Image (tube, rainbow, N blue to C red; front, top):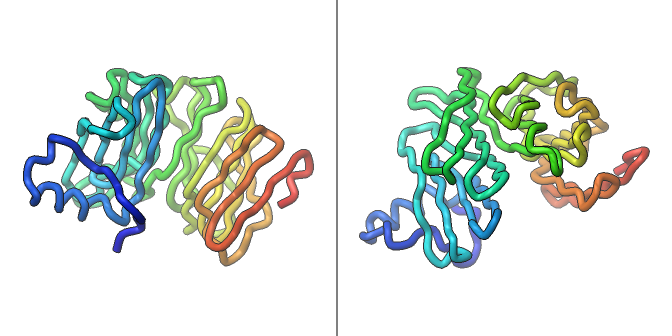
Length: 238
């Protein structure tokens, strides 16, 4: 069952048969898709390791990566410019491994920098505004990772989330030190030390939260199942 609504352009001239196009629809529909636009280039990633690039605002697409093996996916990506980026997701054929890759050639080549057999899919990645060295990743079962060297090396973060089975769906950094993460069963977490430690706030119980966005560090929004939550500083009520 697809989560997509309306027309979706998922391919260009590389899809030469109806069968190939139909299989792509089956693979992509209903799966998590990440979209990012940087320096005139539009990138899309998702299930089965899809990574596609468009330089004409989506009129035509070039497929950079596709891994048909089971348990492969690029679920979060951060591009610093049109050539350099960091990705997170899962990799494996018989059991998923949490995985992180980097690229220096616009996605033509992905370099694996992290792979652990933890069965904890990595869902989302963010870097500090204006600082490409400080970044965080969040994923299944309250998994947090952080980097201080632009994504080359990653270290697990500490957290105090009560339910160990909650999956984190979105993470953002608002400054070099502060960040927010949201996920299943109303989970809301913050960090004040660039992802080294995460503190759980009072949960929005019974509601799965999917995304968080800040227009500036003191003003943000969280969205989820039938929910729209406002965040404000310095006391952070919501």
